[in-house]
Length: 74
Image 1 (cartoon, one colour):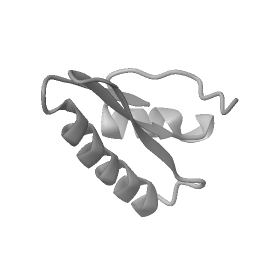
Image 2: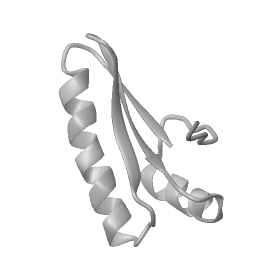
Image 3: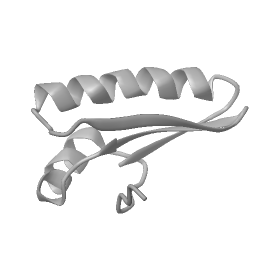
Image 4: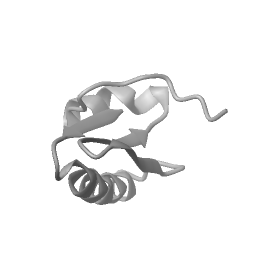
């Protein structure tokens, strides 16, 4: 699940959003907790949370990500 942030504050917002994603994952006992923040440019950053397909719908409805894609660790 991916959240996109644009504008001059995008990096700080994405970093802060990742904190909330980690908190959610701990509260919901999502294992393993895989989150991150990727800075694409000065004006674009994204935060993400990886969840198992079995809880994807529930988590998507709760967190309302901007978009999603299948996670490939390689």
